[in-house]
Length: 527
Image (cartoon, rainbow, N blue to C red; front, side, top):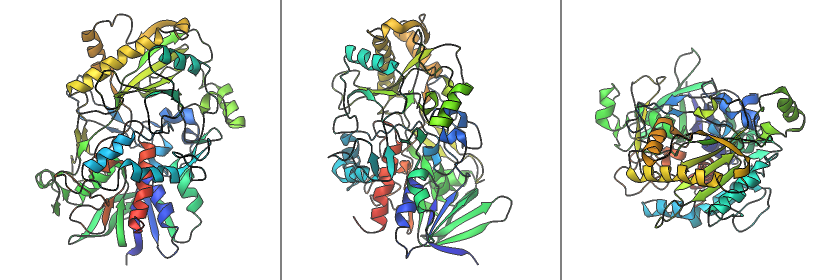
């Protein structure tokens, strides 16, 4: 006899935690939330600056791409959180919504109801911003949005030098205009990470109609003809279990996990599924396609300023955080943000700078013995498109991934211009006075060809995969409609970053929570 619930949610990440909390507000429905990872009690999760220490551990799905043809054949690392809170328990806690035109573009691509005026109320509903309520911001919502606890003094130099290089200061990059330089706001509370599990799930755990299971592997969606009847799962070494969904199965496994589960369930491009021995249940060729991520590269200098994040791994810094939740370990590493357009004629910023008083290279794995600063250009509207697909019918095998980063000439031009502008910022007063020497790319990398070679050699992804279950009522590659229902399958929705038709201009956590907030109202028939 299989267990039965009204809603079965797969994945307790940013979207899954939000949905579980909102749907279980109705005491008449039974909600089951399934998470492959474990609890989120690790100090590597709680301490903000420790997020890179989660990479390649049991807290990380630890994905990587196929050899990428345009970045010297390198495989690019894609960490994804594997614990309650998902990637909101692993990210750098940077609160960025994107631009109004991002969402108006979604609506124009066949997703009515997802324009900026439609989604703004959900950003506001989610938010508990320390700056208080306003036309564009909320107070009293579940998600705490804070100022940084112990920002580095160098931030003021970074902001002033950005202004000197032509980037204006902006009071609120999450308002109607984004271009400019500012301090990041962060999803923290009192110097600790404040994940979607903290914001949404924990306050709901006492409800008798919400059940949360961790350490559970979902093997696929159980289909009864063209209806999703539930999911098949396994915990540990026990056998398979079927959990039934009386109303809907809600996939919130992220832009890699959700398309993988659809394909394992026989939903996808038939030829590709048959090639790995998966029975085709529903032909839907867009599944796994349209993958987008934000690539970035670091430009790093050694500096004379002694109040950097160097030494954050020492006992003194840990003691300060444990006692007061302040100091170096409360940092998000990137503390200053700037959005800018590197050339004329662009509708919005093409580059987002992440700046901080730190050495950050190879996803934090490479260290430098000295005080440093980093200015990292991030490509916010990439034209490149990739794909997620099955390498095997084994549900425990990692899917195959390609991003095709730097395959598009415009993407390459923006990134090279971003590296040049990073150097220009560093040459401006009052930042130039603290610079000792450039470490990356280094003083020997001067002309455009050398910069391009360095970019292809060092480019990384900044952990924002989206787009692999594209939302549209009209697009031929769409996977879900504007209600987030999987085309051609009843009782099945995808609700996470994979539904984005195009990636938002900036960090993707806040938009993912917004998607789940709006999805909860769609499911409950409130919009």
